Length: 76
Image 1 (cartoon, rainbow, N blue to C red):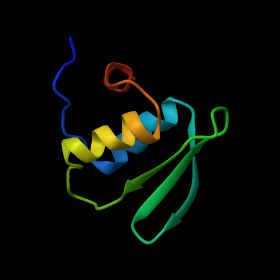
Image 2: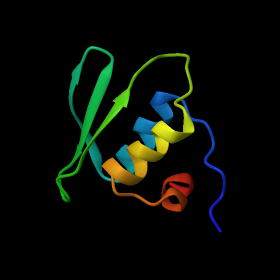
Image 3: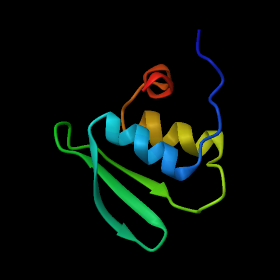
Image 4: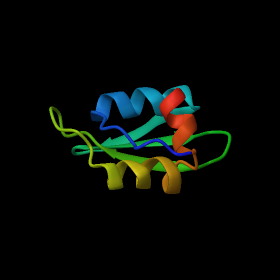
């Protein structure tokens, strides 16, 4: 069963994505682009400090862009 996706700050999301094999590719303004060198997938994380990333946006970042399951992302 899928747990409800918790709210995360942008820095926490980046930390978890790095543990999943992503590296910082480049940053333009307040958006950080990360790339997985093995799968060649890229994902964009808005780096708005002090704000939580909305759940729908987090799901888009994790599942659709990064190709990671929600369960795997929560455990990492």
